[in-house]
Image 1: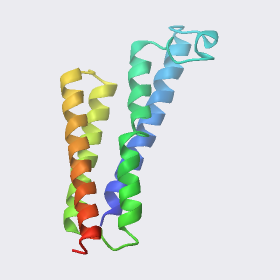
Image 2: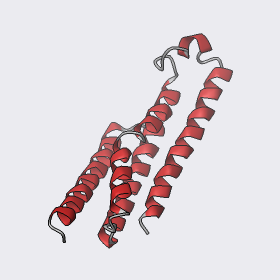
Image 3: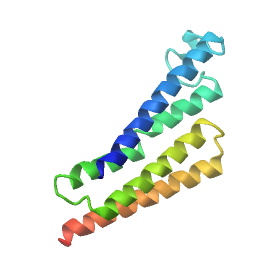
Length: 136
């Protein structure tokens, strides 16, 4: 079922949103930042809060192309087994990317997860386009 990976990716967004709320609230309570410093921008947040915030924001970038693909593939009955398997691989890369971003922020690991996810998503789009255009 291709919707389960979609639900898992949506869950990741909510997990990161709640984590961001928790980290930001903690930063305000611990006086690491003042409300006046963050009222008009993000730059004043402490590093940890910025990392989690960036991980959350990233869920509205590359994953959008995944959501669009699935939204088009479903009504056209093009969400086959390969699409489902690739969807799971993409979702796993997004969890790894977000996990690294929100914790160690190891750039090499984060980029590797991002690049792997981007490549899987590209393969999914090419596969989908070929199926539609060539009526496979």
